[in-house]
Length: 414
Image (cartoon, rainbow, N blue to C red; front, side):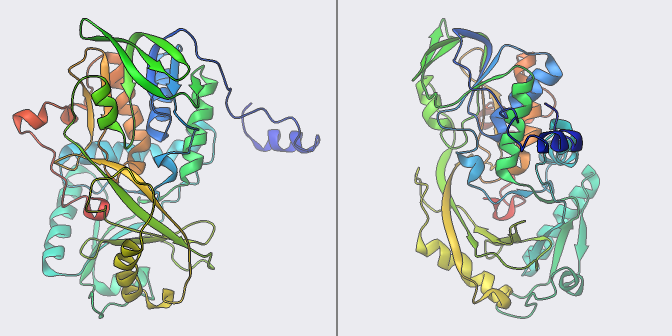
């Protein structure tokens, strides 16, 4: 059923008792042409674009929990594309392009809000970094503007320009913003299901069936499922675990990333503000909560719990930069699991096992790339090799040295 004003009115006449479920709850078949392991935003987007653009109909998405219950729900929903290198700019800008029309495309309001995103500069080194990145953005066709401190204060009137962390300027991307994370997962799930994709929840992959170094299926908690063509693994935080099941290792480290939100406030902050030097970023959700986060934890872990030391590390600079929030109460805190590569860029690649492909290593910047990642990985699965956007992110770059080094341009994302 297409969502529209007409469907809303017609269902109102029956007291909204006859809405169809957003997606089916099918039993797994014995085999599929394509199996996608991971039912988060990236996996569901992959299934949707694979079905829509490449005609795939016999597709399964296997999710060990429920749709929208993993790392898709454990992020701060920031969207931007102002990265330094050509490969990154192409991939993330493609994603931003998709974000701007995504609600219409999948017939689901993902609540994308292109409210603008500021990267603050607190030191001369920061100014040089954002100037370099802003120039590179201009060359790559990514919108970017350098702001003076006075222009920053026009965007955020209550910011403290002359405190412990003086604001010397900022890099602005007007097309950046935020979206609603659960709506993105639900929207892609509904759109993929409408194209015939089987979304199988509570179905954990426990192993891969491999013959002659070729993947032919997966073992799950709901039985074995054969793969007629290819298997795409989109695990968001557990890539290393799944790679070991397939018999190889990935060049990644897994660390927690914490964030927290405040009690709801009246609308006061209508943009996203990031600060690299102090590892703190802030935005305000549609519910009025201040969404606050920082850098990833300095240790390897699969924990999804927060810690008071990280609250202290992030809250101090936030209060210094925005004194009006000093008496705001924290409502809740959480931790997400992130896989980080040596060059701080993702992996979209074939693996040592034939017909087995991995999409992982997005660090803490995965949400912004959701539609772009799904688009690029769907092309890779359909073709059996990397397309133009995915090609620079092959595993081979860690051998030949052709890295996509975004450690600085990723700002507080890593």
